[in-house]
Image (cartoon, rainbow, N blue to C red; front, side, top):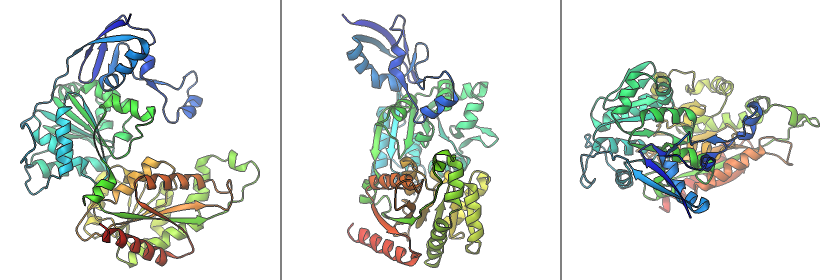
Length: 495
């Protein structure tokens, strides 16, 4: 005989009624990706994040799991659905235009919004390729929605960039919460940092009471307790997560994503965007720098990674020679280029070496409004070269990018896909994207600590269904550009 567990399903949380099994919370746990290292720092912690608190379970996660739990535990959940739907001004998007009628609504954007309308009592994930107009999907949803909405970013450059995009599309004043401003409107762009900081204030509670829908931009970067705590207070009817990359086959990504929003509502991959001419075609030249680093016995295991990275990657003469040469060749050919690194020290080194090319640096310490102006100057052709660190992967909208030189040496596949996607936007006069991945090659395993990271990046790029052409660096920047342009012309001619 099955044990009956009663509960009430709300938009954001499901409340179960006692009695229920004491260990039911074990069905809603996961271990973070880096839990092993966290356990070393947090004594007594078992490595699990528990998403069920008392009798409350995030509804998106509960609705995903409860049927399986019923089967495995011989339970029966008797549920009352108390969810409320977002109300809309239209029944469908047929013939709909944004207030700014000059903005074209793409077919895949309409399809995404129509599916979101059906899931307006909880939300879901919009898994669309970078550059395919996820922000405009939010603008369409806000345009047809009754009530107020919040678009959440986690970086100040995106605060102003998104505000401008919404004001253009919706033809209304957009509120701002962030960068020492607290001025909400019907539609508000907010940083998650400021929302979380003031989550207990009365004005935040009023904001939550009137919030119909919330969007979480770059969802893969917001899967944390800070965002969960903020949503627990605001509790909008629908929450939609926007991302191009999410490892949904892994519990450490799937469970927190479901807890914040819900399952995937719509998916628009990069290769489909290229096929439908909504995204730019591109080619990858994998530039391998051969390096044999001599380590004393046991030295590689003892050196902290931060030291290894600084001494053997940031300060590598061989790698930097390739970066400088490719940047100068891009400048000579009139290509608008971004060099992507990780450390500020690397940015400073590159800026000094290439000062005659009039580069502009974009990184966290540069004020958000200065970064936003640099982005506009680049698109206007006033700045030919950007040198950026990790802020580049967070939705920065640079349309006219011709060349990316990826020199950070990281191993995160999601990070690589985000960076590649930054160059996939279409703009008049752009033929496509040339992406140089500066890799580390070694004659034998173990003599170059960045070899495995190189292989990881290349796997991630191939998952995008783009051509990855390995080439050994021989001080041959001109040849590599000729090769890349030939490959790109071939892609365009077969479209």
